[in-house]
Length: 440
Image (cartoon, rainbow, N blue to C red; front, side, top):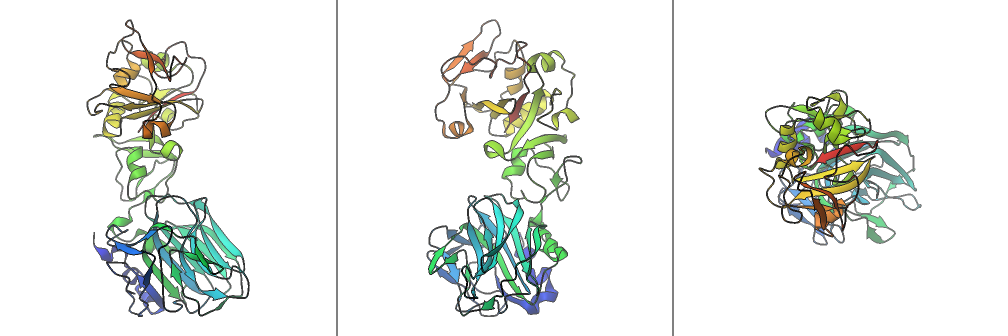
């Protein structure tokens, strides 16, 4: 990747005279603007090679931050702050704090995140502005704060306005306190350390970035691919390409923009089609592959022509039946982690994980074909669990399945005995439940 793709001096060249500090962390803490605002690494802060593009600043979440010999921003208003951030978990942390004082507490202003996954700006004298949207941890996100001459604050997340304009006139005046990146002050104690990485930190005085400026910063460069679309059109990458599955979107480098639960275009094989993706629960990345309002096996198996890749699978809460073509289900299963989730009326019933390689395993034959012997043996070929946490840590795997010689595959499985209407018992005896099957 060409490192200039996110170079703010090239993206917004008309603002270069107002650019007071710019740190790219390409193996050092130098000010790329040339204003001699070299950052000082504190508490094991270091540079890393895996930044949003090129290098980044790496922070440990407990002691590391960087500061400067003096205040970088020379005004409390008409400012803009832009930063790329990567947090390993949702937590309260600060990207940048400007040293200011008005005789009130807190008196600093800066940009960071809260403990609920929002970006937030502290604007002095206890004032704050918080985004409506949340960010995703373990991926790169872009945040911008602007504050105009009337103290109107705006926040942008991944190119979209998510807060403001909100007036929070704290009457702030500058102090001689040092600005910081990656932490904040609480009295005389540093706090809100960031656990993760920061990149492309840019500060402007005398410039209030517009929405189009922010969009240009977010979208510039090949690495600026993002998710676009909605439930009606189906979400794709902004360059018109598709991921192979919901999990490929969720765990990919471009999970930003119009992300979250909803309808996406996926392309696990030669054909692209719409799918509903659960991107939030149980770790996210689940593709809805089959659904029935009452009797999953009876309706879908007895009517094999029903509802392939249709509108019926674009919502997990409606009772109309549907399933993907068996080849699509198998491809998603084999290309992914070899896991499935079974839900009834929105409640998890069980999690399935293939132990032996899923690359040639037909989950559709095991789940949907009445006479299949393809399922294998519990805790030899596959394991089952009550929660996704148990599955991820291989804790308390189920110990019971009824191997019905007439049917040809294990059914009525459970932790220690049979659980009625659970995995491998998707037959005509099901009551009127909303049953959904998901692959990851």
